Image (cartoon, rainbow, N blue to C red; front, side, top):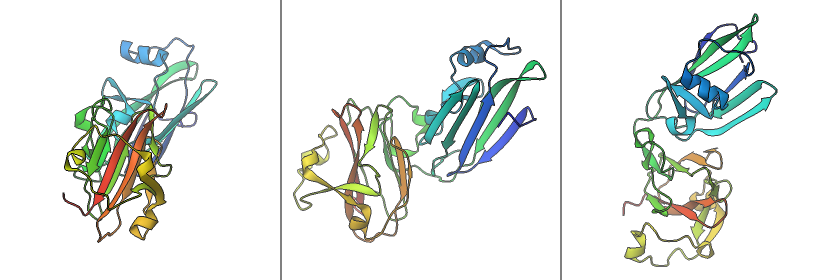
Length: 269
């Protein structure tokens, strides 16, 4: 909170699962000195943390740089800008970025810097589906990523016990059913044969009439702890011995398009 923080440079070390809040009493209407053109442009457009962050001198979208970031919210009250986000439970590589706060102090506008370092916690990509096609492949944390919703409608993952799993949706979609992965879709007729051409058809369509919504406890005989919001969700699988199948989807805001994530636990085919 730069209203009370006296230092001009504040380092902050985070780990997966942390929640961080940032407050800055921006001096929006004052003549700001020592600001380069890039910062000035984004300052004028109110592209502030944590929706936007600076990686070096480049402005970047937080959700692209720290894949799976969730509960990214902000509010404005007068010139006070407050924002927060939750670090996802899965971070593959160290992340470093800055937030700049231009504020008045002793009748002079000064620049203060919050420098965030996030330590990695997982060393390999996790079974999951990321339908954010416009994000960089280099920041992906799931086995399937950067899939275009226009071309790919389904993603199949085959996790094992103890794996993290994740579903990430574009900003104009939301995760269904509510409370995924605590609640999931399961087939009404689980023994119904799936044609081989359908299994490998990435454009096959979601048919809600073929599924029921059930608690994951019904499927696994135990609960799973989930973390996330309506765009990104994570869970760590418990010790599961049996083969288990379930589904969650990304549904477009107009409810006209659905992107499927099929989870096949302990199933290698």
